[in-house]
Amino acid sequence: MGDNKLDQRFYPEVYQAVAGENYTVYAYMNDGSVREFDVKPLIKQGGIFKKIEDETVFKNTLTVLNGTVAWDIAGKRNEYECIDIDPMTIFECPIVPDIPEM
Image (tube, rainbow, N blue to C red; front, side):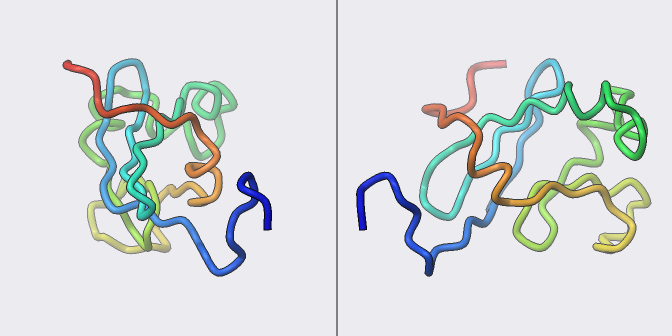
């Protein structure tokens, strides 16, 4: 197996998600990396992501559910009532050293 291939036994998980500026999420992954996820393109698409367009909602409902970045819009910690992102999508985002000073 080459260095650039993901071990088939590994599945990415998010341990912590922190809201950054300008609709950015910093996701702390189970491989020790921190990934920077830009949510703006999803919000611009509208649909379900319209619910997190308000920056206060975006920041205050951000959480981790089922090992991935999620927004708990209903406040019930119910995986069926949240907006979540495939953890593989998060894992494919750029690696950053850590959260910049905000």
